[in-house]
Length: 374
View 1: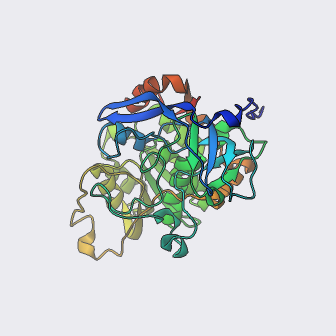
View 2: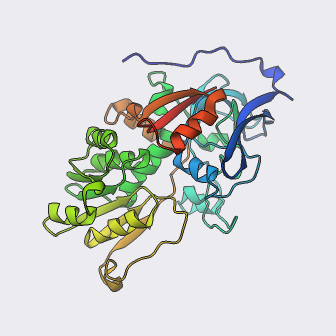
């Protein structure tokens, strides 16, 4: 396979001060539009990267629909691949012109959360009535990656160099959906020989399926109705498919497991029905690993929860970030053990990002992920 390495000539860095760039900006509920914004100034610990490839996430669609609140005028996006354009005066170990990625979560490395070993919750607090936002800053509390340039805070904790042998699209899933999907299996403590059910085979669910396989699960049951996603799930490690459009997925999974249930159920959609289904298929002592972003209150049925006596575990995970996590994920890609390149089904220029949002938000034409290139 021919590898694609970014070789485009960079602009004169001296011209960036006061310059403008194109960026996808949240205006109001139902409107993310392309606007001109100033190229960010670079602080001592920051890095400015020129975006070469980015993408749209399901969380961005929650923002578009007004289901997750962000400030008006914020640049959206949190999955950057790019080239270092300018380094802060205190940043060492990197050089301008270097290809890098940064995770959707950008821990500082020195906060209380980081020192407690919970890097994803760096900066957690209450905002807009939500808690535990953690280190998710791009497109949430600071300007994000759907732009020509991105300012990366705490660059030495977050920038991971991209090997020359890997293309932009090969590493595009690392900043968020690969990290998130894999964490569903990791947080669920999947063990060799486990039976795992993954509810929903969108991009996150597909990565959870791949992660469960890497963790040692020997039977993976994927819950999905769309044929193209069923096919991709099998490609990434699913052993059996349960089509929820043809019947009750809980009953089918219990039939497939002879009434035992599964060791780990991963919920990757963020809805009451899938959360409850994942809980109902657990064996006694099983783990529900929740990856969904929920837009309304969840309910835990008394019977499914065994009145609190079933030794069940319910664990949630915010996408792990930081340069070490990104490096490990790129190592997995480079090893050939997982190929997530086929998840990119559509490609758009940044100038056409509003059309990309329309396609992705309405899930038309078999879309899984879109690649956006300035």
